[in-house]
Image (cartoon, rainbow, N blue to C red; front, side):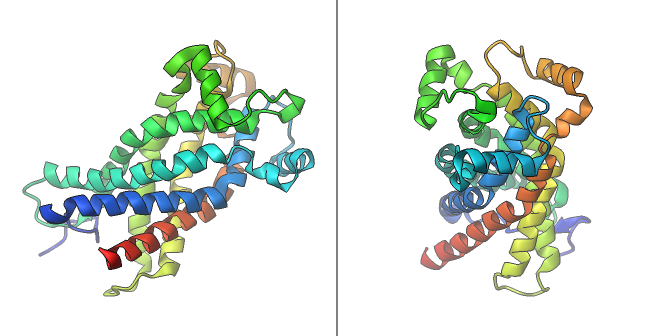
Length: 307
């Protein structure tokens, strides 16, 4: 059966009897991949966030931000705010990879008369975008807590929060759930297109790097494809990520919404401000996401061998 133009190898929809098990495996493997991503990528993420939120002149660049963070808190300071992503990214990546699996099923269900079980790049991107919808429900509050913990103390400011649970306590007491979920739309604006690029790039790159006919897991291909996926995502995700970070870290009342944040950011610092943190984000993108997909693929392989 001929494949449609632009299609790539993708796992066909599983029989109904194994659909639930497949979804559970995707969820567990995604969670394990999330832990790998955090441990490798958090220092880069911390520097990115500080560059995005600090007043002009606080840092001369990424290396200066690293130097000041280490001088203030030691090497462990690069892992400030790591608890929220560890608590949040594990289920967040679990939901993301589960959502991607569900997204592919939605694509199959929406195209009952398809002539091939392989998915096109566009269809993979659509499944990736759909994965961001449920993920945002977890990502937005966890990102809010992470950003607040990452930026506190910079420039000699007072440390307001004692930890992730204290952040949520204070936010809820100050503004209820609306405060806890501030920046949700910006998070979806970042992760929707970003996840579309992320999963499509991974599938395309992995296919291109895996020898034709090979059925064994090729770690070299997974590492390169995972890193490529991360670069693809963050190459388009930085502007909404800057706005998200500013919305989530600013005192209540600073911005009336996403558009107001964009207007004030550009007015104060120019359009270039929307690309602050690009260097650390791209430096993090390859290793963190290579680690993510290695974790996902190895754990999925282990789960497949057991169940």
